[in-house]
Image 1 (cartoon, helix red, strand yellow):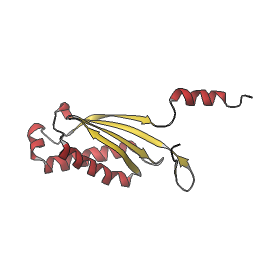
Image 2 (spheres, helix red, strand yellow):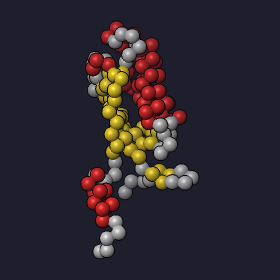
Image 3 (cartoon, helix red, strand yellow):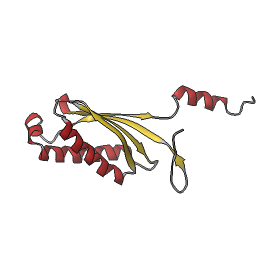
Length: 134
């Protein structure tokens, strides 16, 4: 059984799968750049009550599994992360600047999916069955 997170007034379990793509799907991510992007993620995530669980990358995108607090503002966090990591990575890795121009590193869009716990169908069935006598 998964352990629930808590704060003073609530218990919660909020898991998310985030996919962020490099602008124009340019293949610029190697292990070193991905590791730096991950470090930046961890640093910024702390300020938003977000905990990194898993990180992996391909040449043109990253997959991130994280836990969040109910008061976390996910869209603000994602924008802050993309902005800071874009600036830092382009400054620290000149080879990236050669392949990507302007201030862009990440695509403007992203994919954020809720994950963890039971499948939606199981939760829906559970809610539908509430109040029924066995």
